[in-house]
Image 1 (cartoon, one colour):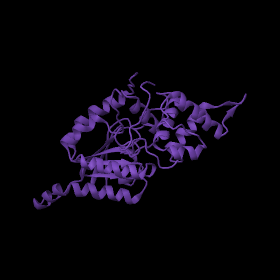
Image 2 (image 1 turned 135 degrees about the vertical axis):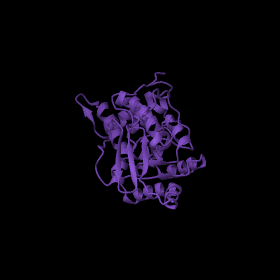
Image 3 (image 1 turned 90 degrees about the horizontal axis):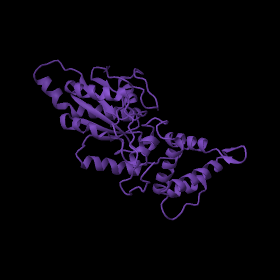
Length: 298
């Protein structure tokens, strides 16, 4: 199986800078995507949890299956990630919850400064995560300004910057960082589906076929109803099966070229866009209840 090594220069540089900047931080926030909460966590960040108190944010909760999100929250809290929240970063109430949790987790530092009569300094918060998990959106919401450029594409934030968020926080924005070698088909496909890997790294039709396999396994009834499909009893788990279903979806959308040929590229593009924007409903890509069956190679 081919290993994907999508680790642009700004990511390598950003990882080194993160390791240097951690000494300056009081606290850190790791963002991950609620639809893929395990796979969207960079294993390289594990060392940060060993050195600093932090919060795990499951972002884009408005796009994820709420039942699965609840189970993932319980799972992470059982693992010791006590400050774990599922949030929609465009929801003001959720932003207030994040702000409150940061202050609560740093009460000891603030109280110590008060007792000593010291000037209370803003809490220095490092914000990190893989691409397209909402780091820059979070910083803009906490600062109340559109200071940081945001996009649904990975690779927009290139370097590290410190920003003031009122009198309470300094926030450190950093590039979304993946790990150097993404080895399993499951990781490759799910990261590509979510937009954490640029669309030109894996062919779009293959990514769309991966999405079809996953959703047909986790949400077969919904897929059948949405596209008028007759799915097999056995899991949809081969490229051929998924490609044939993509053709059916293309026909359902009337995406037909001259000669009555299905426009498979347009069907793949539309399926991915609709999924990423939540137009297909609140559907997660990882389940604690069901192991996905996927091909061994792309």
